[in-house]
Each structure stands twice: as C-alpha cells, then as structure tokens.
Amino acid sequence: GENVEQHPSTLSVQEGDSAVIKCTYSDSASNYFPWYKQELGKGPQLIIDIRSNVGEKKDQRIAVTLNKTAKHFSLHITETQPEDSAVYFCAASSSSGGSYIPTFGRGTSLIVHP
Amino acid sequence: KAGVTQTPRYLIKTRGQQVTLSCSPISGHRSVSWYQQTPGQGLQFLFEYFSETQRNKGNFPGRFSGRQFSNSRSEMNVSTLELGDSALYLCASSWAPGTSGSEQFFGPGTRLTVL
Image (cartoon, rainbow over all chains, first blue to last red; front, top):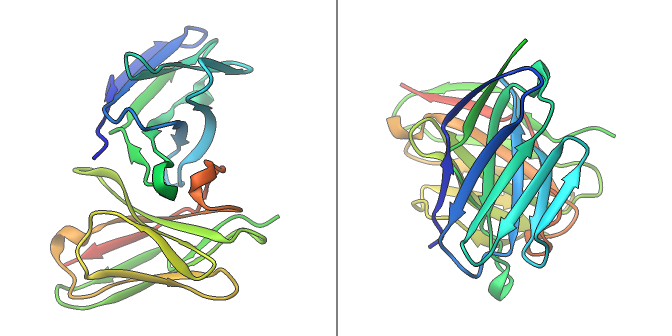
C-alpha cells in the first residue's frame, strides 16, 4: 500500500519567515494530494490540494508543489503569522479502481514565534 | 451552514465494552468517512460511506464497523474495546465520494478513552 513520509516533525520559525514542509509517497498511482491544518481541539481543515496533472498551485501565502517523477510534494507558507501555528498533515490518495483511501503523513508541528 | 457534528465529544469506556459514535455531515453531503487519530499511528482511514453503502475500508479489524442512514448521518461501532482503541475518532463529509478528490470537511472528533 501507499506510504507517506513527512518532514520535519517540528518546525520553528520567526514571524514573517517562510516555512516549508516536505512529503514523499511511494505509490505512483496516487493522484490527489491534499494538505490539512489541525489546530488544538479541532479536526483537520483542508488548506490546499493539488492533483497529479498540475505541478504547482498557489493560494495567497500558501503554495504546494508536486514532483511526480521524484514522488514528492511540498507545502510552502510565506510571511508566516502566529495564527499559522498548528499541526500540518499531507496526504496522498489514488482514485484507481474507484477507490479513495487517503494515506497521511505523521504531521508537522509548526510554531511561529511573534 | 452548520459544520460536521460529532457526538459525543468525549467518552470513557472499559475494556470489553462496545461503543457507538455518531456523525452528522454538512447538509447536502452524501459521503462520510471515518478516521482514527493516535499519537503512535497518526491519522488512519477507517471507512467511507456513500448513499448508505460502504465504499472503502481501511486496514482495521472487524471489531470496527459502521453504517450510514438515508439522511446521510453515520455511526461507527467498536465492539470488544481494547486499550489500544483509545484515540480521537474523526468524521469527515463531502458532497461526492472521495474518488473525485472532493474537499472533505472534518468534525471536531470524539475523544475515546478505554480504561
């Protein structure tokens, strides 16, 4: 089955700096890659996603890049703010055969210092 | 528009008991997925329901089961509870099955503690 590795597990930055979180996946059939933000006491919230036919996607301060050949994708957050502090999860899933079973990374705890 | 609601929010059970958790999806959403989140294993997919039918199932023992009702509300059941079942159980809804990669909206979760 699919295996997703996420790094780093903890990331500490100063307000205004950029943050980059990287994930690798193993199943070449995976074609949908969402990123979630989970704040304390809440469920994960989708912040951005990318499909395998796209190499990069941007939404204001957040961007995701995908390299299908190398099987890795990354989340980029620019001009970080204290409210960006949370745990971020990447996921990979394949829709082959009509199935959608997402596999998640172990999460990155992002701490933005004011 | 109300979000995904899960009840109860917290639950304490003892080994050997069974438990039923409930999830009400966002109005109009017909797909409901369940996940288990633990510090040791992270976020793991349990199963997905669409139009009252289980579409996919993760790698969990048969003690974990679920169902979906005609109004899209879903329940999951865990029988013969084990200490390792202590976790945050998350429910997520979307308007279409996950095959389309449609956005999933998560509820706040049910924190289950097994003593």
